[in-house]
Amino acid sequence: MSELLHHPPVAGGPPAKVEILAEVPGVAPVPDGLVARTILVTLPPGSPGAPPHRHPGPVYGYVVKGATVFELEGAPERMIRAGEAFSEPGGDVIHYKGANAFDDEESVLVVTMICEPGAPVLTVVGHEELEARKHMRAV
Image 1 (cartoon, helix red, strand yellow):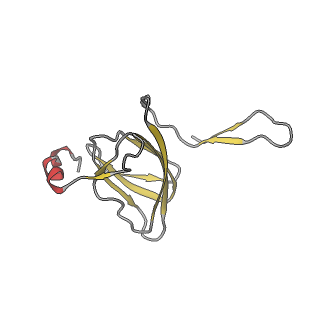
Image 2: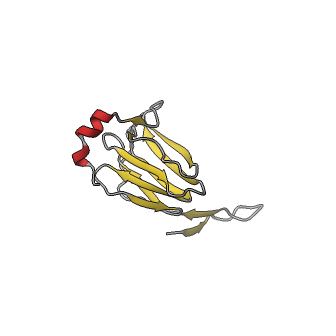
Image 3: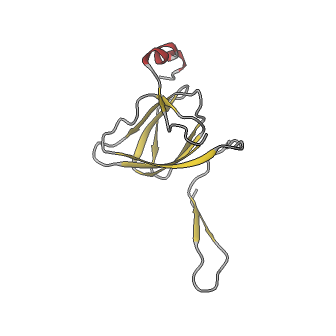
């Protein structure tokens, strides 16, 4: 999707280059009082990522380096590689997996999360709830 745009020329030097790396459809409007939080996630080689969890709001991400094995409740596990974007609705949906796909190199993601100021980045889901919702998992 890479599209290179140029800002209008400015006296004193060359214009900035702006490259659109990816777009994620279905972006919801952001209500007043929320923040957009940009997060850099570095997964060491072989990292399983966080245990099953929820995010406090929608997440829009881009894999900068490596690849991640990604699984959300109701969707099959998939691989997201460097140069690809992803989203998740946050809220009640369980994020089962966000593991580094490689055992010999790190993977890096940049994520923007829409949430209340001060909200935790994630909340781990307990075993009892995972068991009660296992019918909603696509595996």
